Length: 106
Image 1 (tube, rainbow, N blue to C red):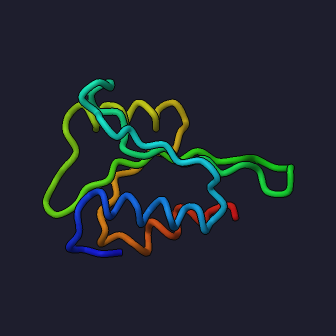
Image 2 (image 1 turned 90 degrees about the vertical axis):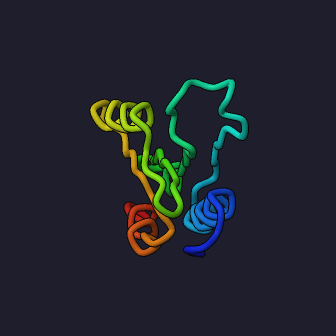
């Protein structure tokens, strides 16, 4: 993944990768000014394979450069994790980890 791009470019790369790995739904709030503060950038949904088993939902906060999650973003991520959800903070440099997380259960 491009390490010198914008967050929008990184988002597009993650959504494309997720689509290639069977995630059929991706949600991103384009204008966060009217949304709840701190909600993760991206929600990805992969339905159960072959009509059986379990589907998957992944929440991801995307960052580029030296950006770090805000207090509100950390609160959302921790709350989601405590509720048993998968919630991550990803930077472009973590491409291998992102691929590994999205492939899990394939």
